[in-house]
Amino acid sequence: MARIAGQTVPRASVFAQSRAPAQHAARSPARIASWIACAFLLASAALSLYLVQVSSVATAGYELERLQAERKEWLARNGQLELELAKRHSLVWSESQAVERLGMIRGPRPEYVVVSQTTDECAATTCALTDRRPSSSPRETPRRPTPRNPVAGLSDLLAWVSSIHGGRE
Image (cartoon, rainbow, N blue to C red; front, top):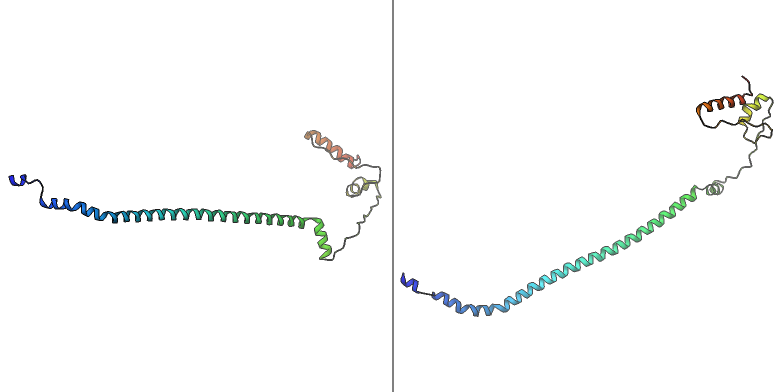
């Protein structure tokens, strides 16, 4: 056992130590080239990713501008249609279309029929209320009561009814 403890370095390890710098020196240009290739691949992948993102942002910006222009066109078209609709709802346009398309003509001025008042009773009740033309007689139609207190309104209503019937009870 003493012999084993006396040996300091085995022979294989001395040989490996003497070959290690030569092997390391031989692999060093290949390792540098592989590291450069890896760095180039990483840089090109990062640059490609950046270019893809920038081009997608630019494309989205152009698409946004195109959609905004299309929106403005649709808003302008909606405004034109609302104007056309307002024009079509006007009475002047309806009258012109009735004359042009349907061949209609404007009617003569209306003539009113005057009902002769034969009795005072007719003049006080039905004739005065149904006649739409202004009355030429000096007699005035009774006024309706205005809304106020219900009790006062009831007395006004009774006074109004009695004035319509000519004070008869």
